[in-house]
Image (cartoon, rainbow, N blue to C red; front, side):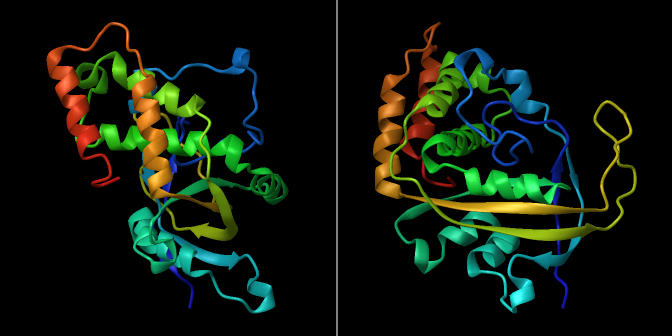
Amino acid sequence: MNKIVPSAIPLLLRLLISLLIVPLLSFSSCASDADRRDPTLDEFHEITQIFRPFMILDFKNKAEGQGMPEWVDHWLEGGISALEALGAYEGRLVFISRNEGTNFNALTQWAEWFSSELDFPRLAAARIESRFLSGVSRPDNVYGAFFVNLIRAASDARWAGAVKEDYFWIRRKFYPVEDDITETGGAVTLVDEDWEFLILVTIEKTSFAYQLDAVFRSIRPNPQPTRDQIAAVNRVKDNFFYGF
């Protein structure tokens, strides 16, 4: 039986710390400093999504009679929290790097060239950002300069211990969605079919927490946060892994 699941298709790419979808042709994470552009707060919020249900037409190793791995099933049904609830990942944090498009060969290269050492910082920064944005509409007001400095530091940190466990792909056929428009009113051209590639990366939770603490301690925000901003930062830090 074909499985129908919802899909979120971003229309604007998150620069430097995109969580979830990596630009199709950005196969290497070793760009020079001159090619990097620091994220701005406006870019953090101008993310529009269109939710499109899709049918899975094909997937990796289906032709050989194999089914989808347990981690893929759980991720499609319940996301990261469902994955981390599996006994196989007890004591570990799970990250998924996603890419999608219509060029299967390019996507395959992206998945095969993925480097835990080079590409994990982007995944870590995106998830840290998401934790600080939980329930917050204007992080620059709430956290002051600490927020942008944190995301930059997490992106540049040399995270150790991340492991690329597996990668998988599915071919999707989308169901039509009415009124596909952007926030600015422009028409959106959406493909009917594409491939989605998923890379499973894990890291020991204790190791991640230790390295995250080092990232926190390395930040020297300028201007200095106000008393209220410091209190807001500390509230998140003290309960960081709740809802992470």
